[in-house]
Length: 89
Image 1 (cartoon, rainbow, N blue to C red):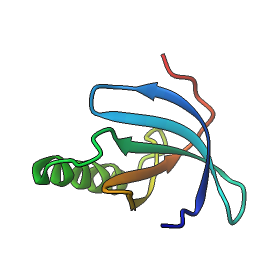
Image 2 (tube, rainbow, N blue to C red):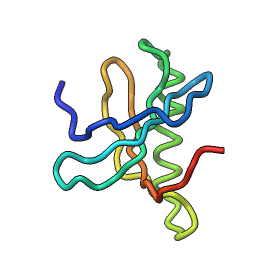
Image 3 (cartoon, rainbow, N blue to C red):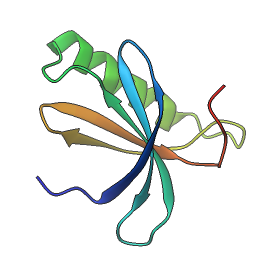
Image 4 (cartoon, helix red, strand yellow):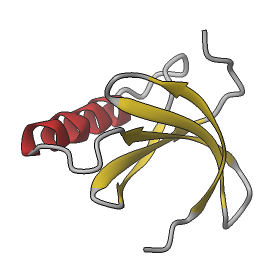
């Protein structure tokens, strides 16, 4: 499967997800890529992740990170988010 982004480095890992700094291939814009950690997530994990994306995308407020897209990643899902240059705490 071809991706439209290039992963630069991992910036965070939780029990459920991996977060990477990346760039879009088409225009080199920076993004944050949040990927479910499980190679074979359960249907309920996939539903929760889709809901997280939809809720984040629906919040159109300047102080909240923008969700750009939800894409298939191997057997899982990845959320493409705005990268405002922040650092993980």
